[in-house]
Length: 369
Image: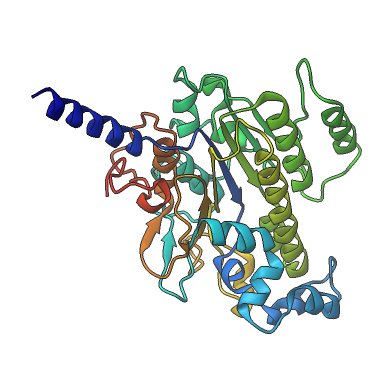
């Protein structure tokens, strides 16, 4: 009788170990208003003429981003996404293949999108503008920061100055570095001090929204110094240049942001805390309109297609299945996915989304299907 009992105990232990996520850290990154059309199809060469002030040389844009096939163009635009993430992880949202990703909020702009990403549910009744109103909803970052395993190990960086409100910095106690914020506190590195000096001396064309180069470098230096287990980084240049109708700058911003993400990921692979233990999630807060009649510049509930988004993931629990060809995912599934990857308790709102099973490597989902 003893041997069967021992065998059953061993099987239960093995099953428990197999079900435990290997992810110990999560990095969640957003590219504000980055269209799925460019992510999967690369540059739309018919829009090169819409670059007026920045990167207005059509011949140069054609040479850099105007390859003959969609696969070549997207590789040129976002080489890290397609060379590393797509080959070693998963990418969703190519509607031309039948992979659909949508927001569930009915606003289709930034604050409602970030609220949905970070809380796991839309809140159309209370989140319906981009005004910097402290978020009444708890984000998954705030929930994690209350848990002993993650207390003081969660951080957020954003180019947009509204993130302290979105993350309700005062209530949550999360460290949020966004907009004109500089690196502060004891022990900041020489590189962070240099970034502070450079940002103070560099006017942003977007007012209080800083350039993504600063956001990316601040986040990287923080990771090196503080070793957070959960990191949120939001880039904004793509949205700003798109609103201005500067298609060339929009493309170059996407390309440079891809490089910033690569730089962060490559550093993580050199650090024992992160290597083989970190999942990277990438998505966007909203889509944009079609190229026709300049609708690509805009978004919002009156712009058809602005609810269409995309997402990607790479990490130890995420099988390397590449580009999805079928299925429907939603923006409200991101928060539960972050929590389940970390094996952390998280109860989405009643209208919240389930975790994304293929990304977490499990059939059982957190929240509602």
